[in-house]
Amino acid sequence: MTDNIKIAVDAMGGENSPNKIIEGIKLSLDTNKDNFFYIYGKKDVLEETISKYPTLKGYYEIINA
Image (cartoon, rainbow, N blue to C red; front, side, top):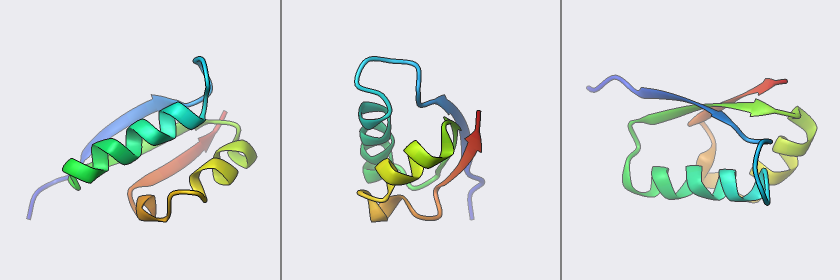
């Protein structure tokens, strides 16, 4: 068993955010299930965006900021 690699991400601070950020997290998990993401941003906006990607479940925690 391997330890997860923990990655903190500001999901609200870029062009086309948070959509592009969440897409990037999905792409990362497509190739590496050892990653776990702490996603910082507006919780309600992030939950709506993440709901489009059910495969992310269990691989992230939203930090309301």
